Amino acid sequence: MITEFSMRPKASNKRSIYLFIAFSIGAVAAALLYMFIPLFKGVVGIVAMIFIVGAVFIYTKYMAAEYIYDITVLDGTPLFVIRHRTGKRETTLCRIELSSIKSVERQTREQRREHKTPTDRARYFYCPTFSPDETYLIISETRYEKSEISIEAGEEFASLLLAYAAEARSAIPEDEF
Image (tube, rainbow, N blue to C red; front, side):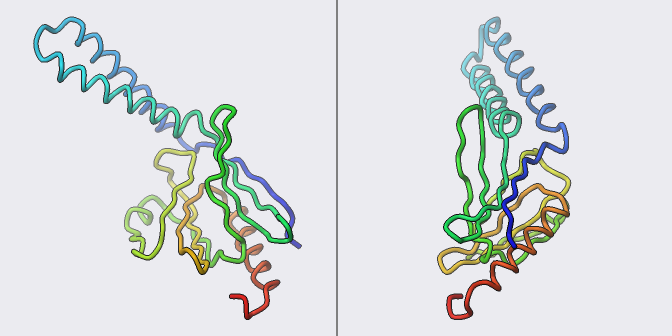
């Protein structure tokens, strides 16, 4: 029996905080240099803008964001849903049927770097941590899309997801695959 379940992963390291601080310090230093330097103001201004954009990107993508992984049943169809919340705004990033999940594999950072996604598959990365040490790769295939989805979860959630996917596939008649 597939029961509804929700998980909110937390960042597993502090790399995004350190990177945000480094970009912020670089932006302040470049802005101060811009105010006092008589030559090359354009170049220093562009560098300051690059640091500012980098700091805002790291903050909005990793520090202010919250990912929510849901296993839910909608109109009798079991689904795996990934939502992204930033402030009061919530966006659904991924919504796949559990029956389309073929495998859930653990990956280390080195395995993730070496992994080559086939050209016929889409690749999605939904992790709250900047450069996480461990992720899980979900391989999903429907008649419309083949995709690889990386999430940051524990072994318990990954095994639960795989078990629910097998249960959802067994509930579908053979002729509908």
